[in-house]
Amino acid sequence: YYPSLRFSEKLMLFQEFQSLLQKDLKSSRNGRYYAERLNVNFSQLNHICKSISGQTLKQYIDNHIITRAKIALDNSTGTISEIAFDLGFPEVGNFSKYFKKRTGHKPKEFRKKLVHNLPQ
Image 1 (cartoon, rainbow, N blue to C red):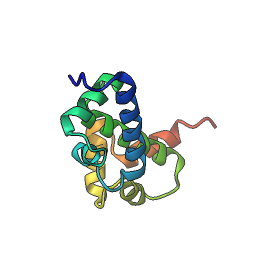
Image 2 (image 1 turned 45 degrees about the horizontal axis):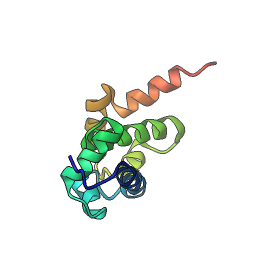
Image 3 (image 1 turned 135 degrees about the horizontal axis):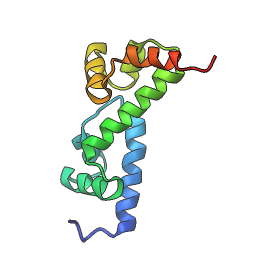
Image 4 (image 1 turned 90 degrees about the vertical axis):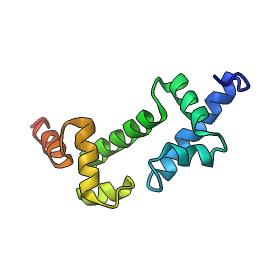
């Protein structure tokens, strides 16, 4: 634990991390990148993330990406390649594997399922 940081400082750092993740997601999906940018070590940011969100830093970043991907697949008319690129995946195949591993569906299947579930 990091007793030198009060809860309010941890919360502020977590909020800075969330803001940075929102802004820099296209640049990096790596927790070390965000720790470096926030001038803390990886373990410290991981601990703060876990104590506030209940998720490890990696889990939090992955869930953030998947949430944004689902929203984009639901609300965007952009291609899956464009969505992948916007989320920091230069290769659509890598994005598809990443998405399927975490949701059980390929992005295309997920989008199709959404369309079929729309009220008529």
